[in-house]
Length: 182
Image (cartoon, rainbow, N blue to C red; front, side, top):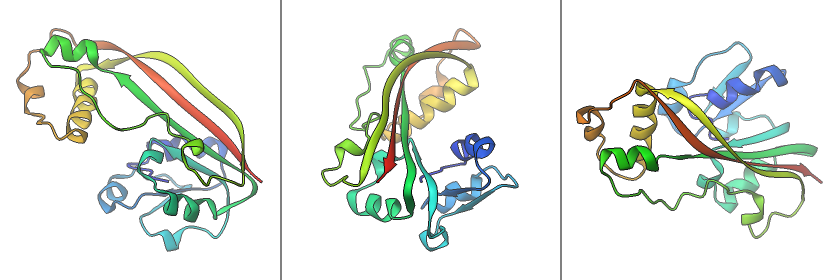
């Protein structure tokens, strides 16, 4: 749910016979990475009547209670629902650029417990982990551009700022919750 350009859908391929990436944005579906066992759609009516795994990778924050109920009705009894997201710590990079800390209302740790009526599910796991990863300058600019756009800030500064290195190490928090439908 909320597959975007299909990165999370591709990650599920080794674990599934069939993957369906759903995103209400036609622009995202058009950019989705093709794969023989993945079909993409922006039309909710094209989703199957039942499934055994429902995943929200970085998309649960955009889902209201009405939509969540509609999506979870597709999940078979005993099926699993996974919520995961990550939050990159851009603060060291922003300080280098002379920017104040960016704040957002986006809740990276959102899971079913933040929905008042999330009955019918049993929590199996919930984890928060810290990690770090290396990225190239181009990847860093792409990540920052997405972050700036989400916050309504101009991305022009990314092309004009002189970055001193070609590779950067970033820290991130990973959020994960898994539920079984009763």
